Image (cartoon, rainbow, N blue to C red):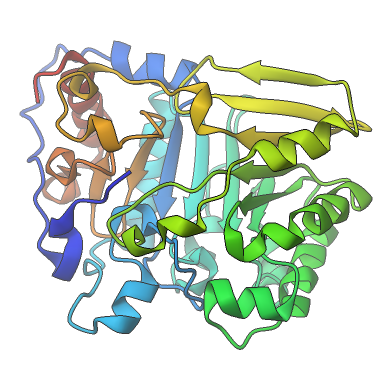
Length: 352
């Protein structure tokens, strides 16, 4: 995907919330939820490492800010109570898969008050923390008191050298591996995700072996283009290499192209699920996607609603002009789910 250039420096276009009437069409929102669409909640755009490929959920990524100090992420507008009210309302309205992201979510001062005060998830609701792993041990005690049911750790490296090349940090790989162990000590389900790239191509098999040895699911992902990594396209690596390796380990292989977002190739090795997100499997588009001028650049399709710390809800990272501003509704938060439902209807019908 190509990120909208007007995120740079905080110059954000957005859609004002529609007037709420009694007749709200919930169909689009609930269909999205039924198809396993995600609500991705960014607690902060800040991160303690600087991975070169970061898209930062549509905000200015840390490595870009590091090189261009005038390009800052959006200012924070939401408090912990705002997050909790928004999440509860959207979950009650049908969205059941909630992912907490950033930046690095554990670097946010809001992480503890938000994550520890989440309402208990229902039987079909899941709360997932996506983290780089560096701060899990530090926050392990209070994380154990949260209703999170899964932690997903980004493991794009397996040595200090590769970690420095990708994330431009002095933090060592031992800290991240210890963070994974800290997560495993308090959560039943810990998963890994690895972005395939030239910089880590030599370590992909080691990451796979580590996941299998520790019986952790892992997802391998092909590189997604953004405006911020355009000069690094030579780093893109096909998933075919890891697919060929997995086929030597198992005959259990299937392709899932239902639901939302990209298709995925699913392997099971000794009962452990290994996913490969492969561009060639296609993606799902709706409504506004049809005539969208950015569609040629889109490889992910429509799969997530993103709530950011500045009070925006965005159905597509390529189209910053489709970002719904919910700040005017915070004084009456019960109206927000209806506004999101109306926005989703307009998005899927192509009338925004």
